[in-house]
Length: 135
Ligand code: FES
Image (cartoon, rainbow, N blue to C red):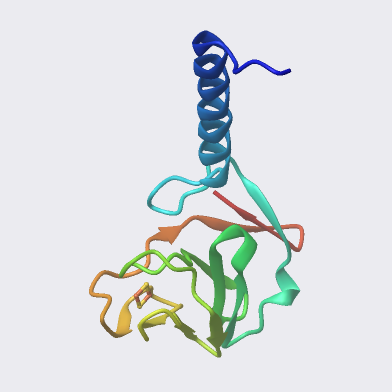
């Protein structure tokens, strides 16, 4: 015959579940500040992956990098300023958010179409030996 767990045992278990839940929440935010700036420098990959006159979306890093003219790179947070979705795609120099239809110029961060009203925050990026380093 089993006995119900003691009240103290139940409370201790609930506390452990709560602590584990907090740990997951703390990690899921990623190493990025609210403005999209990474906490530490990130190597995104080959600069050659970003087309001249176009852009590349790094969804896993929540960043978008464009190259408006050869050798000039611009990086922005890919987190939509409307409600925080990550941009869904880039076409040439335009980033689209499929959540509510906002569109951004990914060479300036400016809003092309709402409902977003604020531009994408710009993030420092440099080309170091053919590799893009952000932050
Ligand atoms: S979150 Fe991007 S348009 Fe609403």
